[in-house]
Image 1 (cartoon, rainbow, N blue to C red):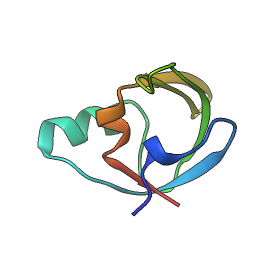
Image 2 (image 1 turned 120 degrees about the horizontal axis):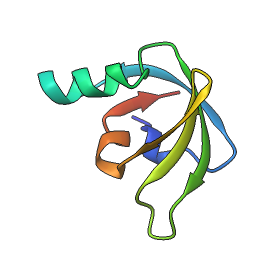
Image 3 (image 1 turned 30 degrees about the vertical axis):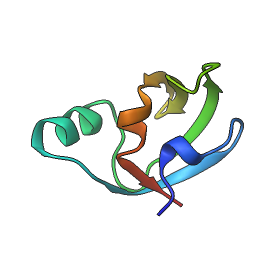
Length: 73
């Protein structure tokens, strides 16, 4: 299983599935990360946390723990 935190800088991935429990999953979906959406990884902080992505026309910063809940292909 490949997750969003595994995607390299400058690459695009498509969301396959969201993992996590109710409130956490809902928060990720509220940020615009839903099944089928394309996510472009713009930057990763020096120690790998947080990750800056471009999704649905805006920039979003995610913690590595949240990015690990987003399964991509």
